Every structure is written in C-alpha cells, then in structure tokens.
Length: 178
Length: 269
Image 1 (cartoon, rainbow over the protein chains, first blue to last red):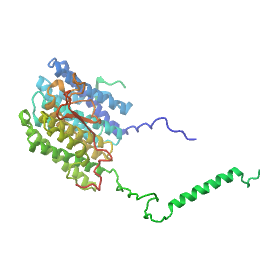
Image 2 (cartoon, chains in turn green, orange; image 1 turned 180 degrees about the horizontal axis):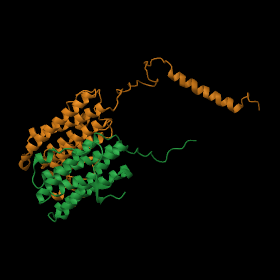
Image 3 (cartoon, each protein chain N blue to C red; image 1 turned 135 degrees about the vertical axis):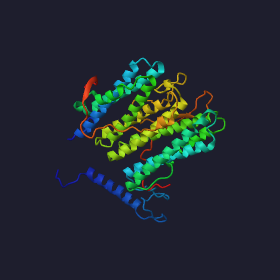
Image 4 (cartoon, rainbow over the protein chains, first blue to last red; image 1 turned 45 degrees about the horizontal axis):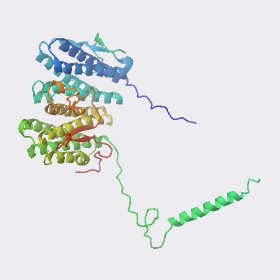
C-alpha cells in the first residue's frame, strides 16, 4: 500500500552553469560586505549612520550565506578580489565612502539582474530577486541621505560585472562557513 | 446456504433500495407545471449557474497584470497632482511625484510591449480589483472631512503602492517561464523599490529610520526605507485617515494580485 510522503520533495539543485554564476554573485557579496566593514572601521561614522552601515553590511553577509546554502560545495565562500581591490582605495572620506558604497550597490543590482537573466534554477531566481529589491533600496538610501538627490536615488547607470564564463580568482579574507 | 439464494434480510434491503431509486428517478423526470431546466429538477426555479471563462496563468497574463498595477500607480499620482493634496511641506514633492508617474508610464509601456510579444493584448487601465479593494477606500479615508493629515496620508498611500509594485515584480519571478522575462521584471521591480525609499524618507526621515524600528507608543512598526534584509512578500500595511479617539488611524492591508485579480486574456478595460 502506498504511503503519503512525510514532506515535500527537496528542491532541485542549481546546475553547473547556475552554480558558477551564483558563486560569482557570492564572491561579489562578500567583497561588498568587506568594503562596508572597512567603512565601518574607519571611524568616520557614528550613531544612526554607523548602525545603518552595519545593517547593510549584515545584509550582504546574509546574501552570501544564502547563496552558500543554495550551491553548497560549489560555493567559494571567499570575497571577489577584483571587486574589493577596485573599490577599497576609493573610500578616503565620508562622502567618498558613500559614493563608493552607492556605486557598489548599483553594480550589484545590475550584476544580479544580469545573472537572473541566465539562471535556470527556480529557487535561485527567487532568491536573487529578493536580493535585488533590497540592494536597490540600499543604493537609493545613499541618494536620499544626507540630502535628497532624486536622480542619484532613482537612476542606475552601473554595468553588470557578471562573467560570461569562469569567475575570477578569490582571496581568503572574509569567508562563510561551509 | 446456497450462494444463489438470498436471505430474507438481503431481500428486504434490495426492496428498500428499489423504492429509494424509483423515488429519485421520479424526481428527475418531467413533472407537470414545472419549467424544464438543464439543472436537476427541484422545487421552484433554479437560477442558471454563473459561468467563468476558461483561463490560464501565462507569461502574457502576468505582464498584463503588471501593466494594470502600473496604471493604478499612474492614476493615483495623477490624482495626487490634480487634487491639491500636496500642500505645505509636501508641495516640494511635486517634482518627485511627476518623476514617479513618468517612470510608471515607461514601465507600463515596457511590460505591455512584452505582453504583446507573448501574444497578449496591452492593458491601459488600472487593476479593477486593486482599485476597488484598496485604492478607492484609501482615497475616501484620505479625503474625508476631518482628516488633518491628508498630505502625509497620500504619501503613505503612494509608499504602499510602490511597495506593492515592488513585491509584485519580485513575486512574478517565481511564476514566469523564462529567465529573460524574470530579469525584465526585476529591472522594473528595482525601480519601484527606489521610489519606495524616497517616499519612506519623506514619511520617516533620517538615518535612524532606514532600518526597522517600532513606535514605542503604539507598538507598531514605523515606516522603514529598508525594512528587511530580503525583499518581503508579506501584506503591505498603511495607516491613513482621520485618527480615532485613541489617536489611531485606519490600517489598510494591501496584497499583491493573486489568481482572482490577474488580468487574464478576457479582461478588458
């Protein structure tokens, strides 16, 4: 006699191409997390401003952890060295840090949207979509605070950095526990 | 006992079934002075069943639904601009409202174009169910006499609609059949999220209002620019209208279009 399943079937794992794209996305998220940490540790921000930056940093770590859970052993769990290196020298003042962090958020929105256009896995697409909306919010916040600049809040001219094939090498700074 | 014989109890049971069956068949048959109907005969006149057209949730239907929400937003912003609700400190928001309206017009054109490419028809009016369930009652509350906060309430409504649009685009990602369409949806969804942030900062400004906070008096969540780490699919709640004796406003809970409010192929403006 057939028995009813105790729980629904597990979701299908992302295929190799999807995993490669998601691994890149994870590396980019960890790089941006580390750049937020650099801004936080600079001593330029205090009070609510500092709390906001800590929240945004925590969000990026949460995205990296979620992607890690999705792709498992295919995750590099290391930040993208290219992204970190390209932006880490730009945060020389408080306002420069804001411009840099906004540019990074806009770049992540463009990159994840580009990745979404290639992903086949349903669960991965749903996760990436839920990340895009919040990273767009992060970017908009930097256009509203400290003073409203409508174009800065609403327009995204950043380009995707998603690879067509293999992801670039990663360093071993921030890692996510496998 | 022989297998072919029937016991007295079995005979009685069969007799009972025959009587019941004959009564049922008689009820189904033609009767004097009762109008003929396709329905099972019954006492009195049975109204015909309401028929629903056959529908299917296709990519085109999802794009048409998105277009209808864009028109809900366009029409609401048009009302905001024409009604004179943006007064005092809120008058300076008219440029932002115009920009939002124009963005939604551009979005509507984009999703309508996709709907046509997918074999559907364009939609150039708001989603009727969203309008009647949420927007019309909200406008009624906002414009009612005795509401001292019409200006801020209309911003609350716009903020709620932007969050609803964001959630709708994020939600259809799980339903659309191709990755290209999912990306197209999220290009627009990201724009709506940015609108929501600008309006959230009007309602609750400053760095301290970016993340989630709670009103210590009411215990309710304050408006936040970035309320969660991941895009939510929960209902969108706005507080609008004249405050009651306790100072509380009416809460309107809005949800993204579902199976009974999608703009199917047969729905027209």
